[in-house]
Length: 197
Image (tube, rainbow, N blue to C red):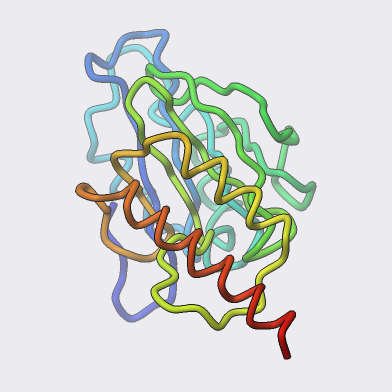
């Protein structure tokens, strides 16, 4: 979706099924920091006889991902999902939960490194990950990562992910699994270095 370059916000993704079938769940991943996404959603062909926006799933509660939520919710009345409860959220996500986004099943993966309520959404069929602000491009050792994050990275490393849609960067459409593996190795080295100090 488009983003106002003058306003700090995140990447927001309107995910639709390939055929816009009536049963497909038109889903916005992250609401951004303002309501200008409403115009983009209204201009998009989202399927005849159905709500343009049926649900919003949030990768975490930071304002650059959520400040536009209430304006978008007021316009389209979607069900809002997040890992923690705050204004506008209707249903809580649970680690390991399966959720239909557009025409595919996605797994909710709790990834508490960027924030306690960070989650990723993973589609096994398409090998696609919506990662929010989970740090998956750690190029050198040196951060202060926790053991729990290593376990998450090990899990992601085993999935053979092909495409990553992140909260702020361009999509990663090649060598995504290599990037995750390198991130895992650098995070491991960071922990070892910290323990040696």
